Amino acid sequence: MKFVSLGSCIAGDCVVKNLNRGWRTKNYVSYSPIAILLGEINDVDIPEEILTNETPAQRERIRNDFSGHIFDKIREENADYIIVDLSDFRIAYRIVEFENGKKIFVTNRSLTDETSTKLNKFLENKFNCNIKSESLISFSNISDEELNEYISKYINVLFEHFGKDKIIFFKPKLANQYIDGDKIEFTPNFRIAGNTNVMIDRIYNIAKNYITYIDAPKQVIGDKTCISPFEFHFSTPYYNYLADCFNDILVKQHFDAEYMSARLLQCNIETHRLYNTVFCNQILDRIKTKLDKEIVLIAKTKQFAEMLKERYNKEIFSYIEYNENSDIHQIRTEIVKTKQENDNLIFVLPEIYNHGDNDGIHRIFFDLICQRNTDYIIPILKETKLVNFEGEYEDIYNNHFIVKTANTIIFEGQANKLYIDVDSKVKYLLLRYGAYFLIGKSCKLGQVMCATLSEGYFVINDKCTASGPGEFVCGIFAKVVIGYDVMFSMYEFVHCGDSHPIFQKKENGKYEIINVSQKNRIIIGNHVWVAYRCHILQGADIGDGSIVGANTFVNKKFPNNVIVAGNPAKIVKKDIAWARSNTCYMLEQDKDVFVNYANETIED
Image 1 (cartoon, rainbow, N blue to C red):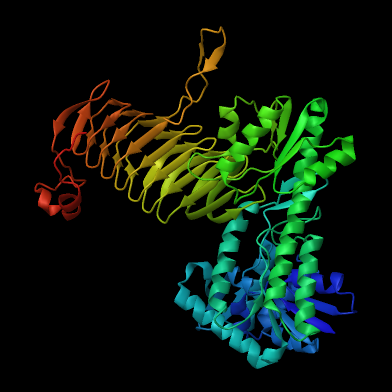
Image 2: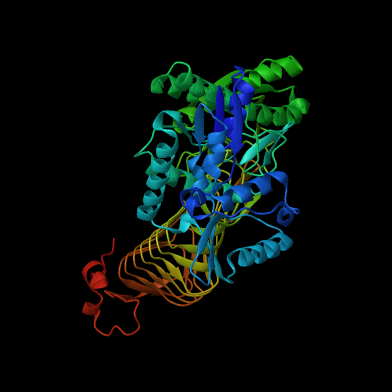
């Protein structure tokens, strides 16, 4: 059986490597659908000498684009099936327009300067007309309605040329990491993988109205031959999963959705085990000097116990099942009980999960006075930076970011969660180990540095603004909630937590930590105005509609609709309201404020 793969080398590789049926494939990769849709307009044979600086594969693609004969090339292969990857709608296309009105539509490609110069000169001679303009169009910048029109036309063209029975649609995902030996490495250019995956989801959400396709798992891994997000191989579990998909469609002539759902789950389990092997190996290397202690495994599976037995011939003392759906309070109970049974323990956690509002594994160990790397061990992960990132980022470390407006994000460790809604901007964000950060719509904080540390919980609601530089920090185990339509002036300092431990000597002669507690909270209500150079510290709770005067120090609770000022802050006026517009001289002009925030002060 013979295949043609249009836009995907992954599916073609799977056909060749895994099915072992003598099947063959020819790959036509990275052809913008617009070049195919409008290819009939193109009818230009590009001479070989113009493309001497390009690779053989690049030459073939360029000639196919300009000739408009890509469908003829596919038909010449006389294939039994055509595997189509619609994610090539993420590829931009170029329109070359001549002064006489003629247009050529081609895939946007990275050509050498010499090739571009030769190509333009050849086209002008060919049509005896100067090029008027060249423009680059991206499908990601058009509306869903326009994209739907292009996708439906493209699918219909494929069906018309080759028939519905010959077309198999394939949906891959780009990987963020790959395994190289005993290390997990980020895919080069991984920062754009999230954007691409978001676009792929958008394309296939539209396309599903017309087709049934083979979906890919969210977590896939490349091997050490990985070059870029667009040129990588996948793990054996993933190839095996795809092999079963193709086998169902082509041999059984039936696609059993329930069975393939189970195979996809198995693929994810096997892929997770490959990653977990790396996590476990790192911990095994660090634990070899601590084998005099009993080992408690807190993990999704007993894989570490198997590897511990194999390497050091040591059994674990106890196993506590722990995953993304675990009841963290039950996990706490089991850890406390285990520690009471035997105090000579070291806890091992290959993975960490985020459990929401300040509830997490780090808090449990802190309360039990356990030291990281001494009493409990987790993988050491380096700091990573996403520059001007927009899209969805998800990795094997249980970090998950949905970013709808480009922002710079720095993160470290596992289980960080971030959501930034549309039209919201900050200077940059820092997240560390189990941090949770949510920023609502239309927040203008472009000069503010925001940080959420270990298991901190930080929420900034819609339409918050800051006029100038500032620093907002949610410390370890802390909680900061900033309400709707809060207005900050310049040089603001919102800081919940002390950043460094403070110890006090007790009657027994021992020093105990005194500055980390569940009371680390900052709550700023809706429609609050924080004026120039204010310090908002833990314990602050500012009611709706209030104003914090310039240079004020706030660390306690204040009611709604008051002005507070001073160091320390105190109430100086009650029953006040304020409007953002400096030309609003009657409160009734601001209907939102008048209806929702012009209230009498209510004190406890």
